[in-house]
Length: 251
Length: 256
Ligand SMILES: Nc1ncnc2c1ncn2[C@@H]1O[C@H](COP(=O)(O)OP(=O)(O)OP(=O)(O)O)[C@@H](O)[C@H]1O
Ligand SMILES: [Mg+2]
Image (cartoon, rainbow over all chains, first blue to last red; front, side):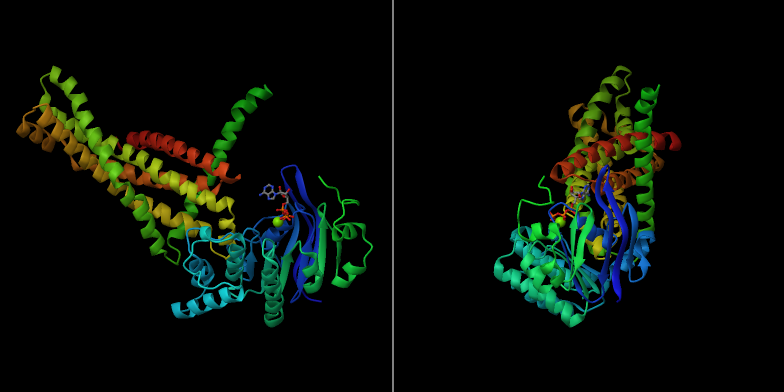
């Protein structure tokens, strides 16, 4: 099997606070991998290490065969052109309107004429279920709308690897389904590698090719949806049944 | 002993660290200034923001300083019967010292703080990460237009400050203090050289770099949410003002 990203014995601490204590995770190329786990276990931090936005304290991250933890800043910038990233809070540029936000990667990295960029922006906004909001500023949007604009911006360049940090959190059920389908369809059509952080167990089991569950700085289980449905791993069982009883401690 | 060492050592280490980081960032900014794409639109926006929007403050500061300075120096010179020298002193002080320093401090308070607040907010809301994620170097995108604008605009603002100061001093001396107009101008033309003005322009070029670099640096290093942005903004103004005064001394000693 071919891997898009490999984490080898990844450690991350902030001061004395240990977040990751040796994560080994291989992301299969062209598949959808979901990362689940309780709030605060370091899912977002892991995502930032996968694309070189945050250096790990120890360990390796290998993207398409290259160790990104030893790359020079210029090489990292080039490497990141392969990624599309949706941040947990969308991270829209608040000095730009919606159109300029979605067009930003296209203006920066392509030489497309304005008319072509206009078309792509409209197309991507339509994909995430937004219309006629090009002139609005991010501060005028609802949380769910911001997230979807962030999603449109992340897929604008049609990257090789998509990272989604909680793409459906804060969306209504219909929009959740639209975004789930979008993740599924972009992957099926373009054959890109997708990594999705999610708290939505139902859609995780429906869409994921592979799932990794994170707890206490380690991967407690990695496998397919079937594996997760049938496992008797106590962490997974507790997490799926949303129960207070079990090995996962509530702080 | 250990406590004494750490009492003096810690600030020293953090001073060296900050100075090093700033020097490195300044170096990469200078290098990136010559790297495509040239973001003309962003540069013009910053020139407008740092320069055009500071005009009213600069005009007020310059005029009033010149006016006050005329009064104050008149008190001294009148005792020796050298009233006509007031103009020379006002122009000299404005061109060499007060123009560059006061305009830089005003810009630090107005634009430097705003630069820190803007970049700091971008930092804590992950917009800087987003730039990185889209393979755009934040130093190229955020630092270059602002620092370049500072270098271009600050000397111009200095020229305006000096001009306003000299005019203000002239009006007070002639209209209020009744100094002889011909003598006043004669002495000023005789004793003021172009060098005095060029000297001040050099200073304000350096100050323009300091104010914008500190603004960008403090914003870029911001952590800890809205509170962090507030703290960084205050620190940015204080640090810029202190550096302006220190570099003013160094430059004066050099160009004496
Ligand atoms: N820049 C940082 N500096 C210090 N600590 C950090 C930083 N970023 C994250 N942390 C800490 O790392 C831990 C993991 O954070 P992270 O955001 O990855 O959690 P998460 O799994 O994404 O949670 P959620 O599901 O709520 O989004 C938290 O305890 C957080 O306080
Ligand atoms: Mg998170």
